[in-house]
Length: 295
Image (cartoon, rainbow, N blue to C red; front, side, top):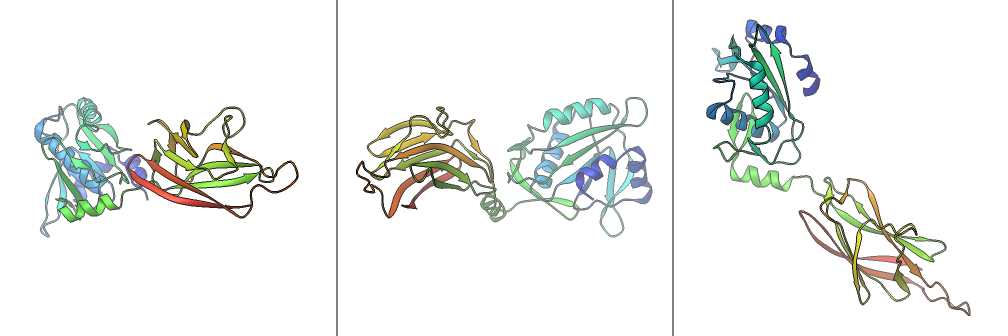
């Protein structure tokens, strides 16, 4: 079962059953008391640590309003219901604090209220595992956490360094495709990485016999990346912060026009044509390489 399925399944009877059987906390489940439904300083710190720890690990659920204490084996278990006196206020505060208690923001966090009697009840929080971490707990903590067993632990420096190394990053690749018997070449940028490429940039050096089209990649003036200018044989293209190349996507940039043969039928282009280029995007280093096209 998935965390989302577990989250949807949690109701009032589920929470009561957890206390009746002494449900243990584990890698994906944590119980928390709420000192004040407005979630003051200590509750905010608790939330910040859980956001960081679950997101940096395998995700998890928090059930707010349940007291958990160590059993005879030293494992924290649900022992008593501690209903939140104003569950709707607590839910509102959880939604407000989700974007404030951790940096960067954890996508996909969901909260729900489970009323019990009157205004009282419980809250449940789903924190998914994140590929954009590591996430730092804020609210006075300013530390990174992980979930191990039934507890949250501070990440060591080498843990944080390793997580930064495993972040999903884009990998941009230039592709050139001959069209119309070689009379034109479609220039595209492909993302072979594991993260979205934002604000991509392309510098392309054209060999003799090639020129950049002024009519974009489809002949109607559309460019996948905005033309910045041409300096000698170098053409520059770039996107703003709203321009992205999704994982596995090919972004057509422009088209190159060629002179395949002269008036007397002699070929202008023959053999390997080498295109030096540079590619870059937000959060990735400049790539400098050469693309070879056989004519």
